[in-house]
Image (cartoon, rainbow, N blue to C red; front, side, top):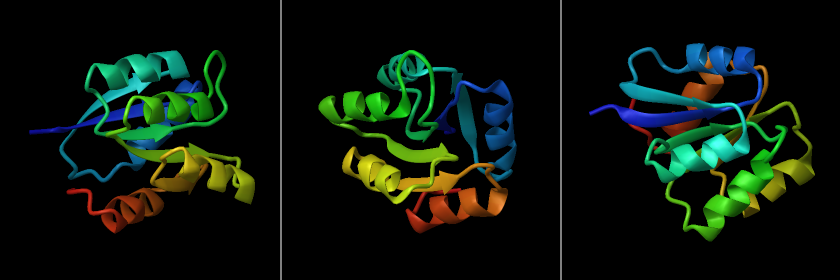
Length: 122
């Protein structure tokens, strides 16, 4: 059974790059969201066992998504994917329930390393 994956970024190019960086043998069903509101809706619909989440987006940013998920009893593995690699950003997303943090632009090795580190079955 495929793992439901949610890729959230306001840039369609960034979403495509992240999807290409996923391990090729990983059995996944991918849903894409271009903003936080779409991400929360997809999460509520059960399409996000694993979520790759950008922080800087219009309407509802990644921090607000994490806050919403935390209030709803987060049961998704969230990997924040962002160019904002400041220590404060890392600490904030961890406090909001994100499991991992990957720097943009993503590369396949960093994605696979994070997934393996946390025991995600590939």
